[in-house]
Image 1 (cartoon, helix red, strand yellow):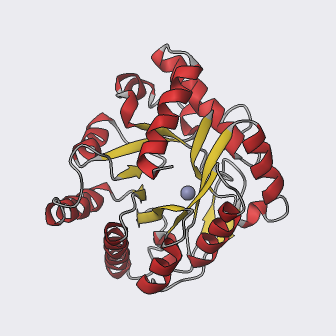
Image 2 (tube, protein in one colour):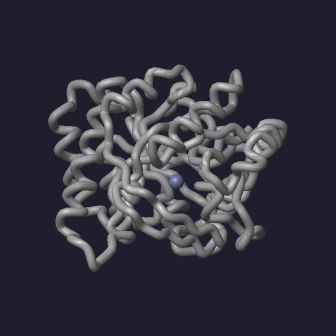
Length: 281
Ligand SMILES: [Zn+2]
């Protein structure tokens, strides 16, 4: 069994066949966390997850790129979309988070890569930091782990996480992970910084078409690792250019097994255990 720790079946790319894709994944022993990026997709993910007794869970949150109107392009899947600015409403999200199937707050974080350089960059960064911090507090208030997105903003990300951890160190259990850096693409020293803050990291199909992370993966402790698709994006080899989906998480597991010279069954077992522990499923 595998757990895709980050799937967006709740996005429009799946609007005509979401049920089929989910059922096919479950029939092929692949569970998933449906991750929201704004209120609408958070609610939709929760609605899908609520239809299943087990195997499908949801994360709710407001992604930094949904604070502005932006056009986003993904070359690996061919999917482009336009975001509409949303204002973060703590109470609305808190209400949603009470549902049984919500297992995390995410995806939340910082994304400086997509900031429109023609607009007020400093204000946009500040707004992202503020909304991210508010959602960290929400996660703390309702005792859920976080799924963090970070693109070209690791210095500010580390600063915010350190402050948050200092302030609430009595609430965060020292030896238990309280969140995951999703679609991790940093180096060894960055991974260690996140580990030292009590977070773990998650790899996507990116590692199947670039050997940049082979060395890092080889050294990485297995208990700090999740696997994910980030579907419909980040489609792994050998399906690049097509829509990604949860069952393709097996290619991520296979790649890690190859690098670590382990059996895919061992990678499946440990990453499933890690995901079950983090999300309490
Ligand atoms: Zn995502």
